[in-house]
Amino acid sequence: MVIGGTVELVADGRLMGIKCDTVEKIKRKLSNQRNIKISEHVMNDRLFKILLTALALGFSTVFCMVVVPPLWASGDIVGAFLAGFVNPYASGYSADVLFCWGVLALWITYEAKVLSVKGGWMCLLLGVVPGVAVGFAVYLILRMPQIKHTRTE
Image 1 (cartoon, one colour):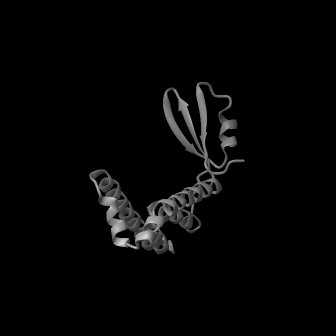
Image 2: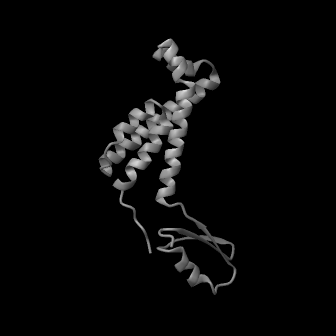
Image 3: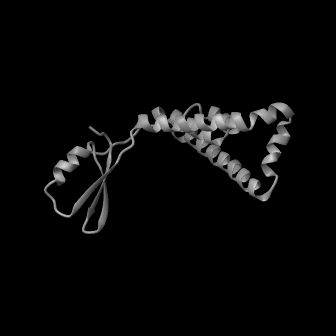
């Protein structure tokens, strides 16, 4: 049984999204209707956490393989940071990363005040090293049990 799925109905060329407690329940109700196609878009919490963890670990691995060896050899942390700005293309990507970290910081601060999400500061540190991809993924995992999910029937 799928809980909290979203069902998209296409009736007479119009798309209508319906949230329900079970996809099977909607299918049963609509089984005798004509010209209705049903498609399911369901990702459960477990799969979401697994994929986020895989992405965070994947980026951390790349970071350790690409960044750590030359950083260890030179010991120049400032130089390593500035190397992200060696040309206009690298500068664009680096600026994007810095602004993404700013958006993450704003989001974490907002949810800490409004939704009382705790522990976000750790994700901001992870957003610096190894990177925003890790900090963002860990924050999404961290906030999941702290946010009340609303489900409509």
